[in-house]
Image (cartoon, rainbow, N blue to C red):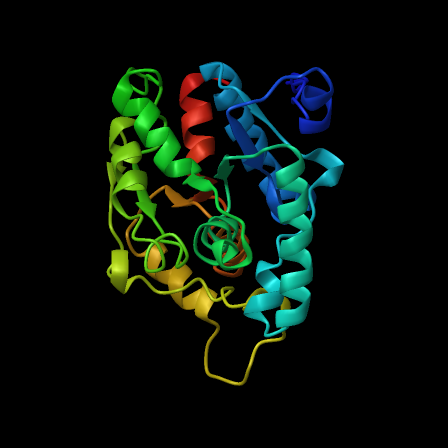
Length: 264
């Protein structure tokens, strides 16, 4: 099936026309460069278009917001990157930011204010839940082809920012059966990629964290492992491959589940 081309509004173009969108959609490094997470970004954009939301992206003006640098201990690089982003956002009078990455969400919400970057930062999960609650996003009806779903809590959404209920309520609104892992919510096991671990070699030990977590997900018997973070998606996808479970379980983002249900 041929993918329908979407004309995504870019902030510079909107600004030149005197248009001020309500939201800046922050794509993030994974959404821009990772082939798998590009599909998640595309799915969420399709939902925004479906809802006729006023938004824009920075396009080529978007740079890394510095989160990996700070997590890795390079404070100077973090501040250089953050201040550059703040200047760009100031140029377009950005007030509201929607993120599809928990790490971007956390750094904008909790760390940018220290450098003068004050915004209303919205996780795409909270945004989608509110749209579903208001009736603007209708998730009911037939079309579910998955028996059960288990949800993996990203550390920077859950423990760092207390976003636990929204993804679970979305899954239930989709008419899907949620099967929790043994460790969930605040007790959920990290995927193994947080804190800049994504970018370094594994340390000595008996077992990789992502394998431990994937095995826990597989024990639920769910046909889908739902994630809401690019790092988590990478680690879970690798875990599924290592476990030779690609034929019986999928790793899908919450946005992809919604887009698929809506036929977008």
